[in-house]
Image 1 (cartoon, rainbow over the protein chains, first blue to last red):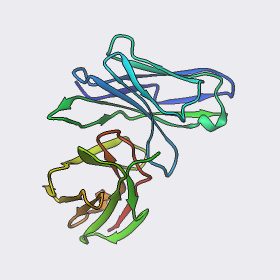
Image 2 (cartoon, helix red, strand yellow; image 1 turned 45 degrees about the vertical axis):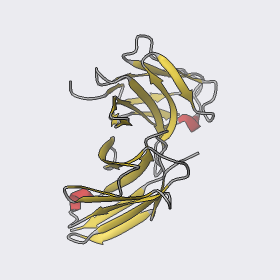
Image 3 (cartoon, rainbow over the protein chains, first blue to last red; image 1 turned 120 degrees about the vertical axis):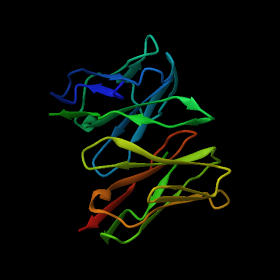
Image 4 (cartoon, rainbow over the protein chains, first blue to last red; image 1 turned 60 degrees about the vertical axis):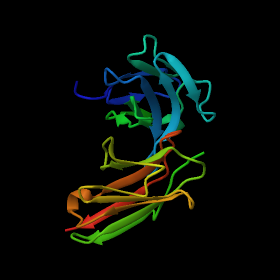
Length: 115
Length: 107
């Protein structure tokens, strides 16, 4: 296992279009997280799953954003009717509970540009 | 809201010097983690310190935790140009990140 992978690495889309990103976590990790990061800022939490259950979703996340993890393995993040403000790096991370701690392993991210 | 808040926002030092950055958080924690992010790349986990620990070392990294002040510090000794990156803290309970400290190490 080579770590968390994300696809695509870059996405350019026109305003109003829908986009979907995929994240493949490390296989034995039961938690999966999505973050959004803009230039000069830290990662902003969006949502996380434990197995297939979505346990928390940021209140900052509009209804245009939806995430799934149907079989508790890979996850998808969909943004509907994209806006220019959605342009950012979308990061995925996975973790496994060990000794009451969750150390996150991050993927390389998907850079979204909305024109 | 962001849980971890790093200070300073930016730090510039010469190679070989030590770099210290701080993190403050708001609620009770089980542990706190530090991450590094090189320009244009993903985050890499550096070190985790548990709430019952006061200090932890990993190579050239030294982390302290003061739960009474809800603060942590990361010390990088004998810095190298390759340490140039942004450093973030995050509380493991909710994994919220601050804006980070941007460290520049000049050769």
